[in-house]
Image 1 (cartoon, rainbow, N blue to C red):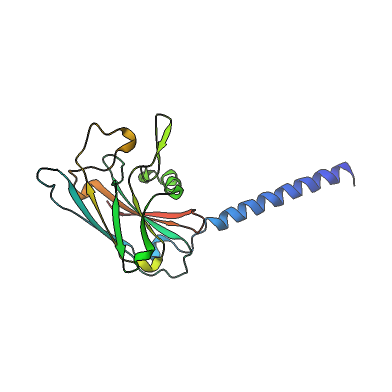
Image 2: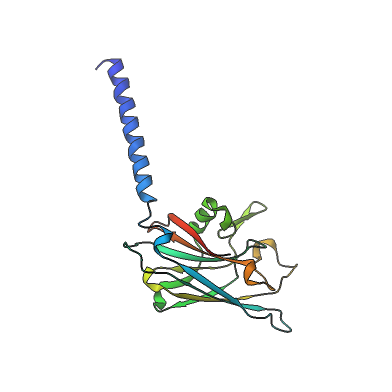
Length: 198
Protein backbone atom coordinates (compact mmCIF):
# COMPACT_ATOMS: atom_id res chain seq x y z
CA UNK A 1 0.00 0.00 0.00
CA UNK A 2 1.35 3.39 -0.92
CA UNK A 3 1.72 6.16 1.58
CA UNK A 4 -1.06 8.15 -0.06
CA UNK A 5 -3.47 5.19 -0.04
CA UNK A 6 -2.67 4.61 3.65
CA UNK A 7 -3.40 8.27 4.46
CA UNK A 8 -6.69 8.16 2.54
CA UNK A 9 -7.68 4.96 4.33
CA UNK A 10 -6.88 6.54 7.72
CA UNK A 11 -8.98 9.61 6.87
CA UNK A 12 -11.86 7.41 5.70
CA UNK A 13 -11.73 5.36 8.93
CA UNK A 14 -11.69 8.55 11.04
CA UNK A 15 -14.65 10.02 9.15
CA UNK A 16 -16.61 6.77 9.49
CA UNK A 17 -15.87 6.62 13.23
CA UNK A 18 -16.96 10.25 13.68
CA UNK A 19 -20.16 9.50 11.78
CA UNK A 20 -20.91 6.48 13.96
CA UNK A 21 -20.30 8.50 17.14
CA UNK A 22 -22.54 11.34 15.90
CA UNK A 23 -25.26 8.86 14.89
CA UNK A 24 -25.21 7.04 18.22
CA UNK A 25 -25.30 10.34 20.10
CA UNK A 26 -28.23 11.57 17.98
CA UNK A 27 -30.14 8.31 18.56
CA UNK A 28 -29.37 8.35 22.29
CA UNK A 29 -30.91 11.84 22.71
CA UNK A 30 -33.79 11.30 20.27
CA UNK A 31 -37.08 11.57 22.17
CA UNK A 32 -39.81 9.05 21.31
CA UNK A 33 -42.24 12.02 21.25
CA UNK A 34 -42.24 15.73 22.07
CA UNK A 35 -43.91 17.53 24.97
CA UNK A 36 -46.86 18.58 22.80
CA UNK A 37 -47.97 14.93 22.59
CA UNK A 38 -48.71 14.82 26.33
CA UNK A 39 -50.90 17.94 26.70
CA UNK A 40 -49.43 18.23 30.21
CA UNK A 41 -50.99 20.65 32.70
CA UNK A 42 -50.06 21.80 36.19
CA UNK A 43 -52.00 23.38 39.04
CA UNK A 44 -50.65 24.94 42.22
CA UNK A 45 -52.30 26.23 45.37
CA UNK A 46 -50.70 27.82 48.41
CA UNK A 47 -52.24 28.00 51.87
CA UNK A 48 -52.05 31.21 53.85
CA UNK A 49 -48.86 31.29 55.93
CA UNK A 50 -49.51 29.74 59.34
CA UNK A 51 -49.78 32.14 62.25
CA UNK A 52 -46.85 31.76 64.60
CA UNK A 53 -44.61 29.56 62.40
CA UNK A 54 -44.91 31.42 59.10
CA UNK A 55 -44.85 28.10 57.23
CA UNK A 56 -46.84 27.82 54.04
CA UNK A 57 -48.12 24.61 52.46
CA UNK A 58 -47.88 24.18 48.69
CA UNK A 59 -50.28 21.77 46.94
CA UNK A 60 -49.78 20.83 43.29
CA UNK A 61 -50.75 18.44 40.57
CA UNK A 62 -49.33 17.58 37.15
CA UNK A 63 -51.39 15.57 34.67
CA UNK A 64 -50.73 14.41 31.12
CA UNK A 65 -52.27 12.30 28.38
CA UNK A 66 -50.94 8.84 27.57
CA UNK A 67 -48.10 9.25 25.06
CA UNK A 68 -48.47 7.99 21.47
CA UNK A 69 -45.26 5.93 21.67
CA UNK A 70 -43.70 3.75 24.34
CA UNK A 71 -41.48 5.58 26.82
CA UNK A 72 -38.77 3.58 28.55
CA UNK A 73 -37.53 6.56 30.52
CA UNK A 74 -39.03 8.69 33.26
CA UNK A 75 -40.22 12.18 34.11
CA UNK A 76 -39.07 14.71 36.67
CA UNK A 77 -41.52 17.27 38.02
CA UNK A 78 -39.62 20.30 39.26
CA UNK A 79 -41.03 23.18 41.31
CA UNK A 80 -38.76 26.24 41.46
CA UNK A 81 -39.13 29.49 43.35
CA UNK A 82 -38.36 32.00 40.60
CA UNK A 83 -37.32 34.62 43.17
CA UNK A 84 -34.40 32.55 44.43
CA UNK A 85 -34.02 29.70 41.87
CA UNK A 86 -34.49 27.21 44.74
CA UNK A 87 -36.57 24.03 45.03
CA UNK A 88 -38.81 23.19 47.99
CA UNK A 89 -36.94 21.39 50.76
CA UNK A 90 -38.96 18.21 50.78
CA UNK A 91 -41.87 17.08 48.62
CA UNK A 92 -44.32 14.26 49.18
CA UNK A 93 -45.87 12.79 46.04
CA UNK A 94 -48.62 10.36 45.20
CA UNK A 95 -50.42 8.92 42.20
CA UNK A 96 -52.72 6.04 41.26
CA UNK A 97 -49.47 4.05 40.84
CA UNK A 98 -47.78 4.70 44.19
CA UNK A 99 -44.69 2.66 43.34
CA UNK A 100 -44.06 4.85 40.31
CA UNK A 101 -43.41 8.13 42.17
CA UNK A 102 -40.64 9.15 44.53
CA UNK A 103 -38.77 12.32 45.43
CA UNK A 104 -35.13 13.26 45.23
CA UNK A 105 -32.63 14.42 42.63
CA UNK A 106 -30.08 13.03 40.17
CA UNK A 107 -27.59 14.06 37.48
CA UNK A 108 -30.27 14.45 34.81
CA UNK A 109 -31.46 17.60 36.63
CA UNK A 110 -27.95 19.02 36.22
CA UNK A 111 -28.10 18.30 32.50
CA UNK A 112 -31.56 19.87 32.27
CA UNK A 113 -30.48 23.11 33.93
CA UNK A 114 -27.47 23.31 31.60
CA UNK A 115 -29.65 22.91 28.49
CA UNK A 116 -32.53 25.11 29.69
CA UNK A 117 -31.42 28.32 31.46
CA UNK A 118 -34.92 28.84 32.88
CA UNK A 119 -34.37 25.63 34.93
CA UNK A 120 -31.37 27.09 36.79
CA UNK A 121 -31.62 25.74 40.33
CA UNK A 122 -33.16 22.39 39.36
CA UNK A 123 -29.83 20.60 39.78
CA UNK A 124 -26.75 21.16 41.87
CA UNK A 125 -25.37 24.64 42.60
CA UNK A 126 -21.74 25.62 43.01
CA UNK A 127 -21.11 27.60 46.18
CA UNK A 128 -17.53 28.52 47.08
CA UNK A 129 -16.11 25.70 44.96
CA UNK A 130 -18.40 23.03 46.43
CA UNK A 131 -21.44 21.55 44.69
CA UNK A 132 -24.69 21.42 46.67
CA UNK A 133 -28.01 19.80 45.91
CA UNK A 134 -30.78 21.13 48.09
CA UNK A 135 -34.47 20.62 47.75
CA UNK A 136 -36.44 17.87 46.10
CA UNK A 137 -38.12 17.11 42.80
CA UNK A 138 -40.66 14.41 41.97
CA UNK A 139 -39.41 11.41 40.00
CA UNK A 140 -42.07 9.59 37.95
CA UNK A 141 -40.98 6.15 36.75
CA UNK A 142 -44.10 5.39 34.66
CA UNK A 143 -46.01 7.45 32.11
CA UNK A 144 -49.11 5.64 33.44
CA UNK A 145 -48.79 7.48 36.80
CA UNK A 146 -50.75 10.57 35.69
CA UNK A 147 -51.99 12.56 37.54
CA UNK A 148 -49.27 13.09 40.14
CA UNK A 149 -50.08 15.18 43.20
CA UNK A 150 -47.44 16.68 45.46
CA UNK A 151 -47.18 18.76 48.59
CA UNK A 152 -44.48 20.66 50.42
CA UNK A 153 -44.15 22.95 53.41
CA UNK A 154 -42.25 26.15 52.68
CA UNK A 155 -40.45 27.44 55.79
CA UNK A 156 -40.07 31.16 56.47
CA UNK A 157 -36.82 32.65 55.19
CA UNK A 158 -33.93 32.22 57.62
CA UNK A 159 -30.94 34.52 57.20
CA UNK A 160 -28.94 32.07 59.35
CA UNK A 161 -29.34 29.22 56.81
CA UNK A 162 -26.00 28.49 55.12
CA UNK A 163 -26.12 29.02 51.33
CA UNK A 164 -25.75 25.28 50.68
CA UNK A 165 -28.85 24.51 52.76
CA UNK A 166 -31.26 27.12 51.42
CA UNK A 167 -34.61 26.04 49.96
CA UNK A 168 -37.71 27.81 48.61
CA UNK A 169 -39.31 29.86 51.37
CA UNK A 170 -42.56 31.45 52.51
CA UNK A 171 -44.32 33.72 52.06
CA UNK A 172 -44.79 32.92 48.40
CA UNK A 173 -47.49 33.51 45.81
CA UNK A 174 -48.38 31.03 43.06
CA UNK A 175 -46.93 33.49 40.54
CA UNK A 176 -43.55 33.19 42.31
CA UNK A 177 -43.34 29.47 41.53
CA UNK A 178 -42.67 27.59 38.32
CA UNK A 179 -43.54 23.97 37.53
CA UNK A 180 -41.67 22.07 34.83
CA UNK A 181 -41.92 18.56 33.40
CA UNK A 182 -38.64 16.98 32.25
CA UNK A 183 -38.53 13.86 30.09
CA UNK A 184 -35.45 11.66 30.54
CA UNK A 185 -34.38 8.49 28.78
CA UNK A 186 -33.40 5.15 30.28
CA UNK A 187 -29.77 6.27 30.71
CA UNK A 188 -30.79 9.53 32.38
CA UNK A 189 -30.31 11.57 29.20
CA UNK A 190 -32.62 14.60 28.97
CA UNK A 191 -34.99 14.42 26.02
CA UNK A 192 -36.85 17.68 26.65
CA UNK A 193 -38.21 20.01 29.33
CA UNK A 194 -41.49 21.89 29.30
CA UNK A 195 -42.47 24.82 31.46
CA UNK A 196 -46.03 24.07 32.57
CA UNK A 197 -46.83 26.91 34.94
CA UNK A 198 -45.44 30.46 35.21
